Length: 158
Ligand SMILES: [Zn+2]
Image (cartoon, rainbow, N blue to C red; front, side, top):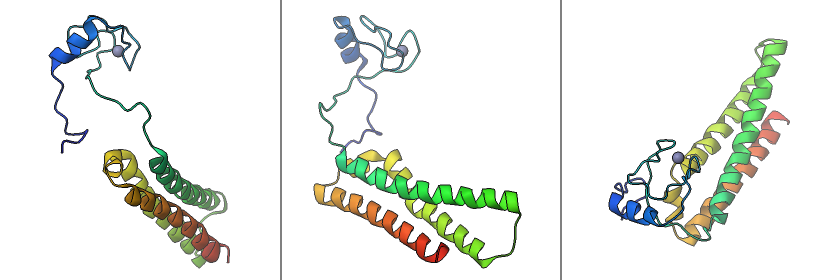
């Protein structure tokens, strides 16, 4: 199977043929590409391709996964920044609680941030999976976030 990232450039003839009789705005700058004779927008210079799109893309499970991971990543990142500001204002001190705080928030950023970035960078990997796998991804994302909050509450607030 050919993926979106491996798709060879379109046959320029099909694109030119499509644009011959249609008012079509450039997706980048909005310039009307009607009668454009090559694969670049004459206004902004972006390369163009002809492609098939979905009328109603089903992104619910993908977005549920991303939002779950983003919430956990953001939670940990903000708490880590809070700790850094505290150190800048109050000064560094040797305190096991500070190390625990840094370990828990840093772990949260890595464990939830890495799969979140992978989902954003390679969305087709998830889109190609069956519904059960996609539901599992979404559940895992939210379990990670709730676990992240619970670990933070138990270790850093306990
Ligand atoms: Zn353009």
